[in-house]
Amino acid sequence: MEKINYTIIIEPDEDEWLAYIPAVPGCYAPGDTPEEALQELDIVFEMIVEEYTDEGRPLPPDIEVEVSASKS
Image (cartoon, rainbow, N blue to C red):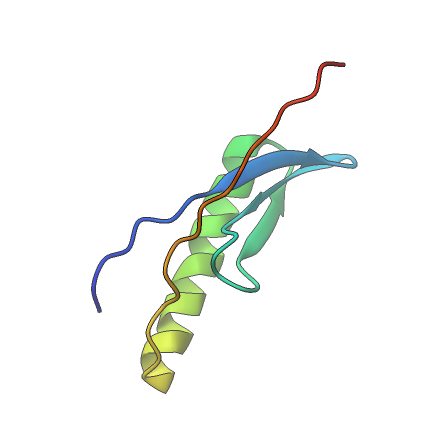
């Protein structure tokens, strides 16, 4: 399977952090810290890659994501 670089978003969500890959449906993971959420996302992503590989499906291409920040 060819290597694809994906955009990863990490943002606060209620009392935790959420990391996700917008281009890959279902690829998200929570964590108590941004680092923990990213570590968990890596595990989820590997499981998704395995599923796609087993089913003979290509991974979706990355998508452009527009990010905006608001002042608190």
